[in-house]
Length: 153
Image (cartoon, rainbow, N blue to C red; front, side, top):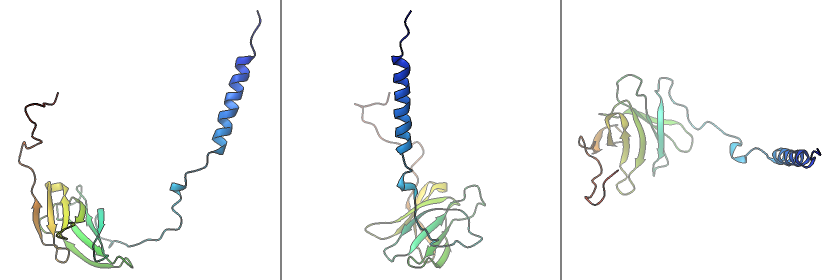
């Protein structure tokens, strides 16, 4: 019985081709961050932070997020956008210890902070930390309203 040598040669060529292809792959440039500098440093007693936004004034606003930490209101840190120096640190009145997203409203320029721990959005005064509820949590059992013609399966 005659054995074929074509299959081993084909496998060897395929292996050589794959190995050659792998040898040409270089690391992605996206991972090279180049030279980086520290923008700002939080005070030593600051809790964890989550999210940031930049105001029209060029300042950088950051809030704390520490749901496993003490049940105290979150804080807001305001940094100078040019040099990273801490301008002020205020307690967000009426908040939980788990605020995570913040942004300035595009029309009213109010600082809106998502209070994840209390399931609401707060309108926060970035100078004093005073807050009001911008959007309350949904009513119990509230959810999307479906028309009679469409029902989930």
